[in-house]
Amino acid sequence: MNTTETFHPNLRERKKVKLRELMINTALELFTKRGYDETTIDDIVAKIEISKRTFFRYFETKEDVAIAWYDQLVEKAQKTLDSNLSNETPTKIIKFLFSDFISMYENDRKHFLAIETLIAKTPSIRAKKMDKLIQCSNQINRLLENKIGATSRKIFKNHLIITFIIGIFTVSIDTWVSYNGKENLSKLVDQGFKLIENNKIL
Image (cartoon, rainbow, N blue to C red; front, side, top):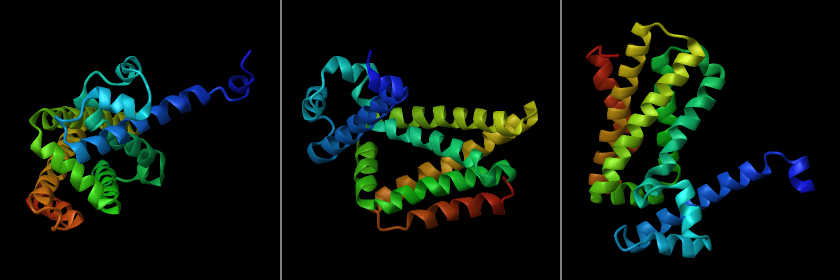
């Protein structure tokens, strides 16, 4: 009997999470240093000293590992809804969530600028990113529905709000990348919110 796992039933799961994070960070490091096309899955697994079979347990393609860190959006949404902010309106909750996500970019500007520049230059990753954001949108909407309850009308409205805000987020990042990070990302996002609010969309 493995006594470690007996006393720490979540140890195996924590190891899986750490390995997944290591794979994502290693892949992004190689992509930004060597280039996406120049980096192979063999390069990634060799760097971490794991098998390709292990890699494919976590990710189906190279594109999937490149945008996997966007899952943090859903994780942050869950934490936000578990906090006191759950008493706020869905619009305020979602705005706070994306503002919090943007602060992650600003805290490691060079790293995220390199990643988003890579995504902007690589059509296959950009397509995966958009798919991932749609998935995140659907998951966040379900979290809101489960937390605060919703009629079909509210579900529609919440989903519409999330979609608008993801649009603001995406366009702000595209603008930020096009100016090589010289624009203030938070200000771009705030401008997007103000434009929509002034037109009474939200």
